[in-house]
Image (cartoon, rainbow, N blue to C red; front, side, top):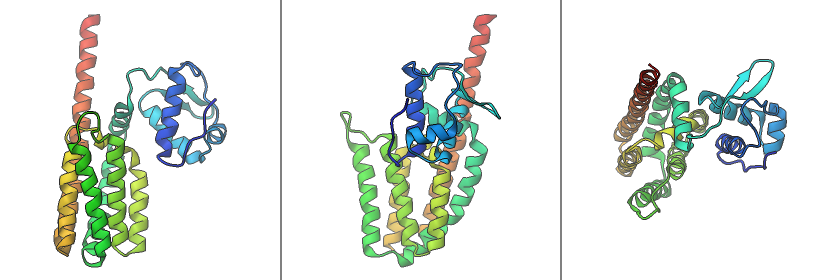
Length: 256
């Protein structure tokens, strides 16, 4: 039923293939999806990856996981694009994401401070190259503009490089674990208006502090960046909730 996928952006790829199968009529509303073991074998991924994908689809109302009975398709994903799927995820799991952002702020600000003293010139050059790629993508026009997926990949690489440059393997492990846990929210944030630009500016400020070997400046720049992302999540979710409420009120008015 499904095609094998690569090990990159695993949960997203599983989501995309299930959505495609529903849109093409190979799976219909009311149908029961294969079990986790079967899906994991079809996709050639682990069961936790499948479980995460189903959790995302359940968050946006496409499927329902019924305890002891399996996973059922509730509706067609018509009208849902990649951005709306991830933003819907963010709306449903807002409190979990914001709690993780607090942990991320503590871990990554410490990593940035250590990197200011320990990063090699090559590390800093690599970070500047990532920021340059970000800017180049934002400045392109005529269809070459940076996509949310590309921005997500650059953002992930930027933060992983700083964690590595901290020289502390336990901080690196923590940062990677947190990064994996907030994979979906990182994607959602990059679909928000002006968020890519803000991230590019924040990343440049962090790199400048590292170039200056300014530990406190690097720490503060990282705190500013992550708190800005948290504010974007809060405001984006609130805007989305208000839009949903307006839509519901319009429907009720039409019925009345």
